[in-house]
Image 1 (tube, helix red, strand yellow):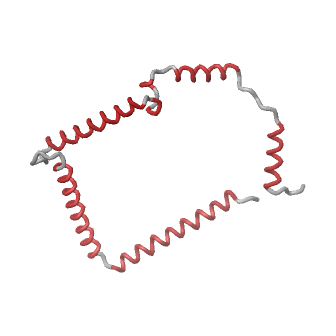
Image 2 (cartoon, rainbow, N blue to C red):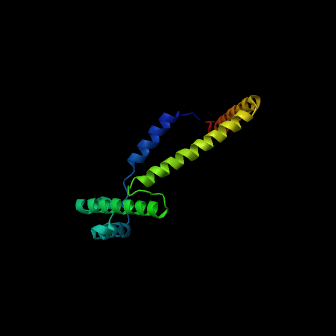
Image 3 (cartoon, one colour):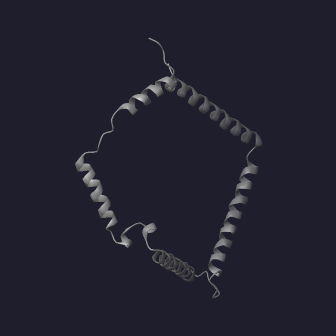
Length: 151
C-alpha cells in the first residue's frame, strides 16, 4: 500500500468534502432560530446589551456611575476617619501613603531575610530549580514525541 504524504491526503479529503451537496437545516430548527432572533430584537433597549443602548442613555449611565462611585469613595474615606481636612483627595492620598509604608516595611523585612540565608543555599536552590525546569522540559518533549509522533 503506497504511503501518502499529509498534504496529498489533505487535498484529497478537501476535494471529497467539497463535492458533497450542502445539507439544509431542519425546518423546525430554522423556525426556532428565526423566532429567537425576532424575540431578541423585540426586547426594549434597556434589556439589550449596553452597545445597543442609545448614545444619550449610555452617556447618562456612565456619568451616574462615576458620580455614585465618587460618592461611595468619599463616604468610605469619611467614615473610616482618614480625612482630616475637607479635601476629597486627602483620603486616597493617605491610603497611598499607607500602602507605600507597608510595602517599604515588607521590602526591608525581605532584605533582612535574604541577607541571613547563606549564599551557597541560594545558589543551590537556583541550581535545583534550573534542573527541575530542564527535567520537566525534557519529559514534556519525550511525552509529546511518544504520544503525537507520526508512525
